[in-house]
Image (cartoon, rainbow, N blue to C red; front, side):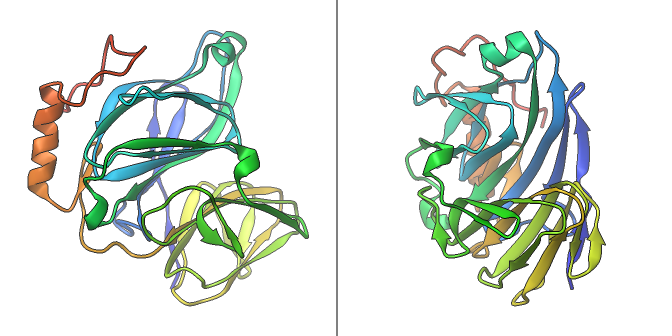
Length: 287
């Protein structure tokens, strides 16, 4: 049976983030252990997003926007603005810290923001890889327009296309835009699959799906997604995790001891500094 998940809503001051995974119904979908829907929101001139420096281990962060922009900086020295349709993929591995802020040009004029950030748990054999950051411009991603459906493969393989984004396990991650009355057949080509409807009125196999919800799909079953109005959605999933994962704050690991070490490392400043953004950072939450 499909499982409908209503995300928890976090109000960050005029800017809402909805977290669908992890939840009681789904701790993960394929390698995805964290699914956040950002917005939609509109920021007036002089305002924006400021996520101060914070650490990660054992995962990769994946950022994809439908509108707006974000500036990424990290302890490797990366400085990259992400625009709609681009993919930012940051592999934390043994440890990295980064910040995400609104670029100055958007902050000056005001801007809309709408997108998703997900976390992919790294396989146990790659949890301690060297950290890295890769940006993939929208034009580099495989895309297809067919009968009112626009598909863009963010990471992994889907619909006969493969993203240039380097992944560590079989991954299924697609941005979907449908015009009204368009239908999309969702094949059973990934072991675990889910669809998140960001915006619009949609149906799965003839049953209405509320927007801003995640629907975990049946294994091995072909489904049909239909748009009653224009729809924005994301497909995500892939190979199941190769073992249980512990999550605490921004840390993901198969080892509780490794997470404890990461806590101490952040407290002691061992993650390093972010060039151009080293004045303040997010402190470790109270234990």
